[in-house]
Image (cartoon, rainbow, N blue to C red):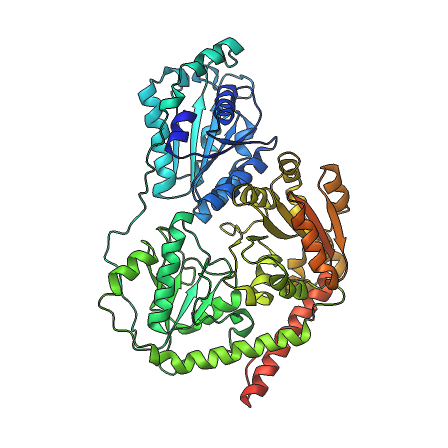
Length: 576
């Protein structure tokens, strides 16, 4: 089974302990010893699922998880949900009891066939009486079918594999089995690159003679497809002359023209509207911005949304026509006969660019890179200090929103990840470690609750540690709640019901896992602290403490200051 998957392209596998899964574990160990598989071990199945998902996101192909039977399978559900909603390939291999032990009170036997079914692209089971009943050709068919599904429509695929005893062959039996393989003749199979395509012709749906805007949401395609996507996006921007509002997760190419970087601070009322209405081309899911949603809603229907092979609806606003075969296919189909008029957007683009520059001036003036650490100032300072091109993962809470708002100058300078398919904080550390294990040095920016929620992820950093620098923003609880309307409740109730500060020392927890850690108190020391963390060439923790209430007020003040500055620059009034 595993050899067939490796021949199809499986490179990364996370193994969790168990007895019923022993045949899979022994096979994984043998492949890893022969250099055919990158094997990581994890004792927590929930953490393992997210770790594999991080590796899949970095590599663009499915990583696999092996678990034993019982509740181990249930612990894979959070990662499977995220893989489903983020359209990331994930292969879940779960060992099970044979049918004779089902529904009769046998130990560690549950209805695990049903645990993940609602979110998986495919569920397949081996013979109910045991996988040993399959021929080699049938095994290959089972493995290839599962692998091809991860490519045709990326997402989670569940293979439930019943095993009959004996489960633990002797050393002599194992050596005999491995000696039967002709490793010298082993050849990699060509990967199936099939993708979901729409049956309908690509819609034009846009009038290129009128002003328009491109809204690029988070990238949800496979890594191998990203260069062609970036080339097509550049062609769209150059040909149309339309301004581009891009999410930090949009995987845009460096130097993309017509970027409006600070749109989060300009929307919904501080960008001048087009006189004849505005065309809207939306790429992928919506960014995490209520202001953007409000603004897009004000523009009305007739918008065109293009997804990267995602057939499910990605428009909660209900304003668009969706084409699911990807930007490259759409652009190749319509660009031949399209008549572009970039001059029609020249005036609008100039006004938006001027407003964008004013916002940058406000941030430069009010967020100096010195003194005590605030979250907006930290985000603004980081792009200039992080090495060029260093990948970044942003926790799916305040960090991803603050990076969009205050680190906008970094847009397009590096690959940014944030797992927002289901917008949870589950598995944050495990995901980041998976990214770093595949792509090399990586920085994770996260809050204290997100890190504590996945504290078992530190176990993945204790051995063969990936080069991950964890920048922990410790604001003593869930800082995102101080920015929501519920912040109007009494502070004691807010802490008890929402923020939930924990009495835990993250530096001590890191030390318990042999992870080097430092504390940062001043922005002046940020550069040296980053250099220290990245020089470790392994997982390290850098902690900064902030005041969530004061930072929530600072964010509000910066928005007000921005609106006032734009009013003065235009010599008129702008609705706040």
